[in-house]
Length: 266
Length: 124
Image (cartoon, rainbow over all chains, first blue to last red; front, side, top):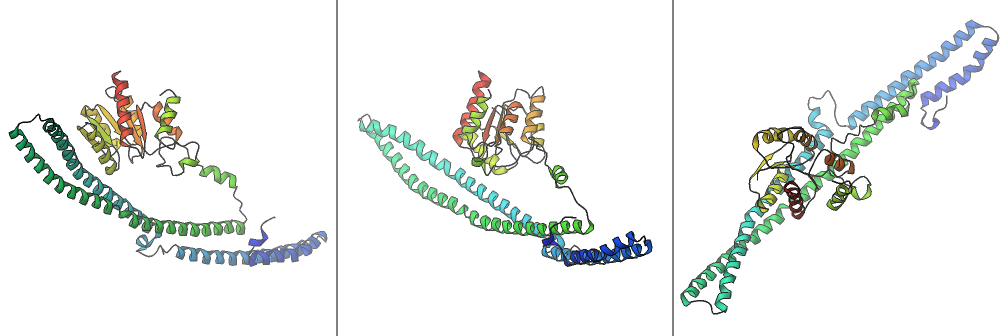
């Protein structure tokens, strides 16, 4: 019965010692045909086994209890849901979704407000340029020029006003990016929460492994891995690729997409 | 030219709508899922479909397959605009009959280019 001695508990060591102690006596009683003595020795070993099992289970139960406390939820607590780390992490991520949605919409609003101002300036400048060139070629009557002068004056006034407005809009767009600071902080916190949860889960896994050992069960790692293998369904998506540059089966940009499609005749 | 824009994120629908408007396509409608988009397509006389892939109820690939399987819709030009970037997926979409594939993040020029290419092929 080979197993890792370094992770053996004191109870297991005690049991092994009891077996080692009684084994020669057991062999001897069989050799002498003394079945009664043999049965008595086996009962004694059994008792040690039961006691160590009992103490081992007690130890694991206490550890399990502590691990659950680490998760910060007592399932009997009516507020367990609100206090759970995962609920907390979810709420924080929802906050990130809300903030980024708001920021994106604000920025687009400002762009939509600014675009017409720019379009007007461009349009009117083009039209005035054409007329100004006529004037420079001396291809314009005096009264036409008076009208042109008025238009130019109006244009200058309008441009002054609109450029102030555009400046203000650009500034607001910049300010709208302030979400990144807040969402960045929240995301970092969620990363910590996740690492925390993972380490608590690993503790539970180790304990589960110990339970297996105590009761003598061995799970084939091979079988477990097969059951866990995720079905690779190319119907469902994976979301944005964050390691595109390091993976072979992922494209890095539109040029890659176009090359792939044309190489297949699409 | 009536265009349906399908994406579960409203900000993306807004961006595409604005880009299409800049290109002169002002007659657009929106849907937030393949499931809401399909009935709109079936009753709406759309000339062009722009769709995302990942959507909660019916994703873009399934929507594309439904469109290609419907007698009235099977010739509808479809442009996919999506973050999905695995080669397998791009090939799957192409084999399912998508007319163009734009990967996010994308530029206004890319969108313009792909739309123009699709119409060249459709009219040519």
